[in-house]
Length: 229
Image 1: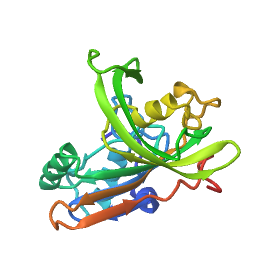
Image 2: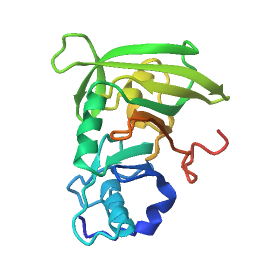
Image 3: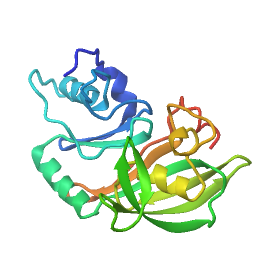
């Protein structure tokens, strides 16, 4: 683990679900999910310290991210606490048996109140680009959205992510003229290190109990975007 100071008690308010197999955390925007080699604070090391203290484990702790979200995005991140859970959840994700619901506050209004978006994306220079089927490296990206609320400046969308491509939601919403608030990289008028994209809910089958879990993350309290939404 990094030499940075990880205090387990500080993570407690962000814990969404915990048992012997799983740990779900409401990631703050601006924090890395995993160590990137830069030495910057990351959620996985912080969560590993929480498990070490909570369970009184003096040695190494098994903890692996089942999925990741962008540094600038907040919301649910799920960790496996056993190798059995990790293997089963990885297989469920491969089969698209997990449902990921995001809330996005976007500039403008989408052309339809609800729709399914299908694009082909390529990934280069730290961004996703809308491409064409058959282009080198292009992967199909699919999501569905519905309009929940409209203000003078923004629209609140619920996004059901069907595939998990790099920067997929950011690129696809920008492609229909609705960049995510704060996301200058994809065309937003105002830049912010925290973009208005929140992984609101994760639905999955528990890897050992075989029951449906719905893990929901409240909006980050200190976000510049979500107050009053």
